[in-house]
Length: 409
Length: 111
Image 1 (spheres, rainbow over the protein chains, first blue to last red):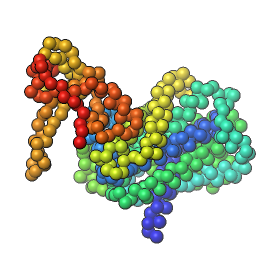
Image 2: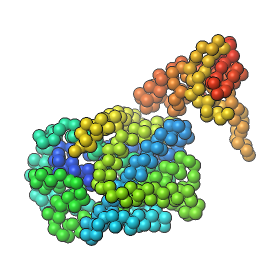
Image 3: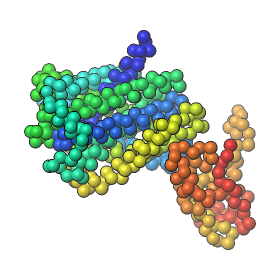
Image 4: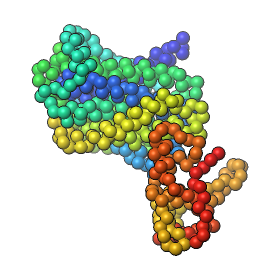
């Protein structure tokens, strides 16, 4: 019974943890501009993140060490540093976006300008990172984040033409008013939003924090293989709401209130309140995850002691580096840059940096010296290499498309 | 001199002909780890004719997955050879020069 509860908890946490500000914004933008015609990308991204998280979770559970320690040891400091540089940059960008997201959600709830909420959000994130137990932090934000299911409920309440939505999703085409370049640019953004590397570092370091062993592999696989796809469904529901309400009205999403608009229209104030709760929890949870991921990657690369299972005084550099990252994120927000814009760029840069974080894990997961008999099996490797190719193409195409389309304008 | 500074430096033969670049340095452990770690003995350098980038571990022959990453990396390092420390004449900021009549050993590692 306890085991079953653990599995259920893990799955629910994975659903709530999947959606962050990147998914919220990108899916709503895409839904409001392209309808459901990019829903296939969410599917591709979800399968990718399942594969990625499965490999790195397995590396962590089998070797008892987190991914970055293994990467540095196995591929050497130079290749490791390229990986670290890329991941760290994306992490800082994502931390910035998530803190902005918390502030925007609180603005939506209170009417007080988001910039005034930023210091509050910073303090709250830091206090939790510093004080709260790993499992509590993980489960509470994941479970409260589940209230984003309100997007799926809203979609039903809106009574859309399901046939038309399915038609857009299953026979995708570029809408007449948008160019093909913009379509593919947003395809990459959506892919980057689903496959953000921090989730993977967090997941594998979390496996070490929670002391996973080989016998826990089955449960971790279940968490990933059920939780992430359900999270993906939630993403599609966000796009669906935007496609039903915003697309016909000609509103393309540029703010969080527009993301919330369809839900408010379908379910009124109550639904809006649930939505805001969900957005705060999801962005707060993701802010914790990205902040911790920055600390994890740095500490694991440089060999500092790390982890929330240690007291902060025993992992001082780990905690200091997270404070620095949080302050850097807040400094960026203090310039008055639009958090939604930061989010849109962060998901694209995630896609650009993805090969540098994906390839090392693919290589380590194939090394019998680390993995023993738990190396990738044939099916995982075939999928792994297909995704390596997809990731490479998306990464190489992203910058040219960004320039050619003016970042999807 | 830092050993890692040697990575990527040019390798010349006794006559001054360029052979490639230092892509790795190989050590041997002469005994199992005891109370102190076993001292590592420098065996030689791996010279790669095309690239100083890392083998990423694919110098070990038993690892061939995932296709085609392993194969691509091996192909990129084709013609790599191991030169023993005794065969190195000069090692310095100008690069590495080997003694004439050095022996090129297979750089691959087998079990």
